[in-house]
Image: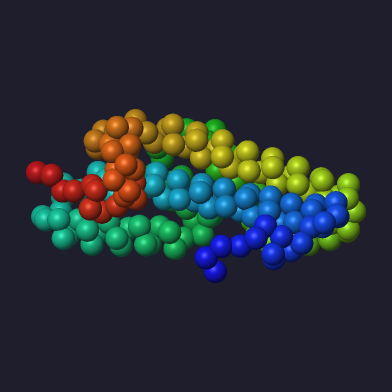
Length: 187
């Protein structure tokens, strides 16, 4: 499917249809932001646990393999296990860890209970507006937490040469920000 018309999947000609579509859209955005935060947690773990070992690798191939194993392993974890791994690193402020545990609860609620708990709410316009507002609050929560995590990790990352300028340069080149090849072994 190369393109789509706005109303091709679900025509929304009346307020009820528009609100239903908006609930699904905002729910999707909230889940997306939870996943952005998950990637932020993996990147934080990369900075805290893997980057300090890069000079221990004899060559680029060894580093590439270690990097790929680490990234694949961390991305395979559940949200809760990512939070536990960050707790074990003992490098983040306690208030940030408290909010990451809260984020886990919010993410689990979205993934497992949101629509079930709103089964009756979803049937009214007022209820749909409430669901939209709840999703918007969660989007903001996840975004703010991701920015706060990034602010804590940025100075640690800079110690390894990953500065805002480095990131901007690699973004201009169209590269993923942190990959095994962009962080090479330097002796």
